[in-house]
Image (cartoon, rainbow, N blue to C red; front, side):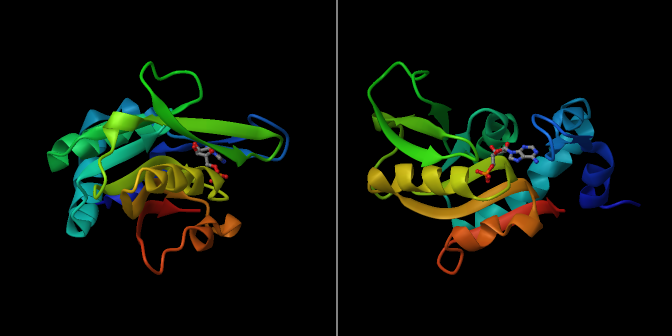
Length: 177
Ligand code: AMP
């Protein structure tokens, strides 16, 4: 009997040189075609992160929405979308951050996060950690607490985890490359 982690590694596709030369893109879309495995993934993540007592899950656009919403629903807590600039219709807080080339900006609705919320940040993949760190800054700018981070995939060789101040915050990844 294969573990969930073994099955996930078998199903995720590595696409060389996408979206640019030298990047090995981890394509999680085949997981979406396997509902039984997808349910097991959500169950396994929930078993780990429930211990941190989050009061909401913040998923990062766009692949952080795919499992993030199911994780929140399974935990019976709200899901908060963190989106690229200009996508959310109501008043927002925003944070700019550096990408490999250039800058990006992410936003969250002001009324989505309450002070004293214990927020679990979820994304499909942790690379350098810049995106997750910006999401954490955004949450903290609204006086809420980041209670931990959850990723389907961690690219361990990029040491993103070290940037996330995980001595005080919890961390869970399903598979590591
Ligand atoms: P980073 O800010 O460097 O941790 O990059 C993480 C974000 O970029 C996540 O939202 C990922 O979806 C995406 N990403 C970065 N590198 C990859 C990769 N090799 N394969 C798939 N997605 C990636």
